[in-house]
Image (cartoon, rainbow, N blue to C red; front, side, top):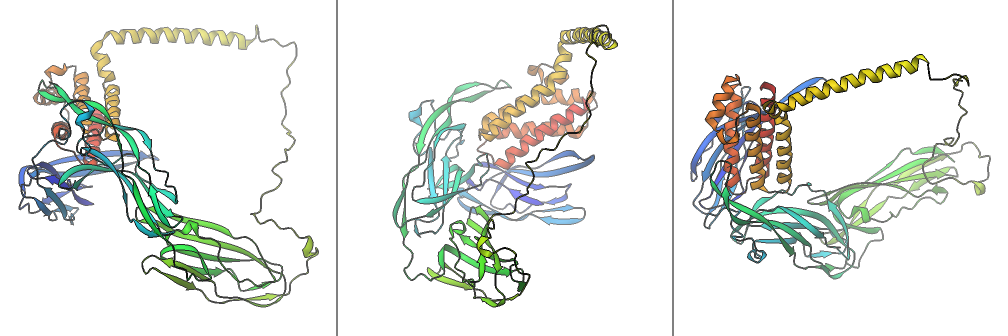
Amino acid sequence: TFRASANKVVEAGENFRLNFTVNANGTKFKPPSLAGFRVLAGPSTSTSSSFQYINGKATQSISNTYSYIVQVTKAGKHTIPKAQVTVDGKVYESKPITIEVVKGALQNTQNQSTTNNTENTISKDDIFVRNNLSKTTVYVGEQIISTIKIYSRGGLSGFNDFKWPSYTGFWSQDVKTPSRINLQRENINGKIYNAGIMRQSILFPQRSGTIKIEPFELECVVPVKAGKKRNFFGELVDTYADVQKKIKSPVRTVKVLPLPGNKPSSFSGAVGSDYQMKVNIDRNEIANNESLTLKVKISGTGNLKLIDKLFIDFPKTFEVYDPKINNNISNTTSGAKGSKTYEYLLIPREPGDYTIPAIKFSYFDVHSKSYKILSGNDIPILVNKGNEMLVSNNNISISKEDIRMLGTDIRFIKQNSFELLEIDKSFFGSWKFYMFYLISFVAFIIIVFVSRHKISQNANVALMKNKRANKISKKRLNMASTYMKQNNQAKFYDELIHALWGYLSDKLNIPVSQLSRNTVKETLSKYKVDETIVNSFVVVIDDCEYAKYAPATEDNQIEQDYKKARELINNFESVL
């Protein structure tokens, strides 16, 4: 695949990153026309690769990214045309992307909301939460998509004390959302916010009238500017402190209309759209007292789970059992859709020619605002005379559940042979007794030897740092991953930078204060480290330092930077 990615919304005059990524070794990259954009840097090329061993087989994945730093000064919507790249002689094209440019003074999103570390400086316009409803006027049983989103002008460190709406008056089903909130830029009244979905639910109103949806409440942990300090390289940078801020969404109301009164006799509560019905019977000829299966599958978009029983006119001489119901329904961002299957077990008791009249199913269509009726065909069934039953029908009691396996409550007699020991046979003085003491003595000697070896190793500080470099870097990467899940961009990149520089400091036995890009290049060349790995290190460091102080970066870019840093340390570990 070959795709383009960038922030969907930017401020006029803001620097932002434009990436073109191909998941293979690409050549002959042909950039798009960037008329109307000011190119500040690029294209820079970065490559990432990973190896996986599954069942003894090695697989490699490669990704090439062509990056630009660009700027737009004119407000409005701007389209970036398609780019081209060649892979194995075949030309691939990216899809055009549209970027919305908003008027406003360029500010770092981390500084837009606050300048002090007091809660009073965080205004209601800096961070808020909304319960966005797909509709506010619906019929009873018509689905509504409820999307709870958080909007922030700055960063977010975490959340506490959730109080979700109870949705009284609705039957609700949650839509599966990512465990980590993905923040994306949105334009709200001419201002850029980082917006993320916290929960999505599908609501089905159960009564008519006006129904209120209570607010969603939570406590946010917001990083605010606290002062300045010197960074890793001795430069003065802003510092931030976490402040707790309680917010809640406004009360929402939904107007629920009653269903029209002219309901068909086959109406069983279905409300939605695009319903279909499929009827199937396993055979049309059978002997009496034998069973056959009738399946009715209802599919569509709407309140499938709430559909009641179907109205089917079975012959009176048929013994009919309660249907087995199978729901295959998906809750998606566009609503509940799927199918519901009714499986009936039928046993004709008397021979003859029978007909099951055409099965009808009706539903209220939310688009046409009227009832629609689906109808199948008549089902003919020929019942031949079979063997007479030996037991009167009045005494027959057949379970309406699936047949269970019997006999699992019987425990069989164990016939294993047992080893009998002589009563006067003693462990003391036997060969097992002396073998136990010999093994214990050898184990003691090994423990003493290993302990002395570790003591001598710990005395060599440089050697210990070298051995622990990978372990310490993994701890920092895990901490960076935590910040990534919390959408704390500044702390994420700070931890990533410390992990990379700290790893090389321990591995090369060079104090952090003496490390620089040139020092790293010279030292790694002495170790005969591949030049591409060294260059990748410099590129990753540059990208991380830029992103740390830049406006909010897209989630996929943050994940790529994290993956590159982890792969880089793994590459160093294999050669140092």
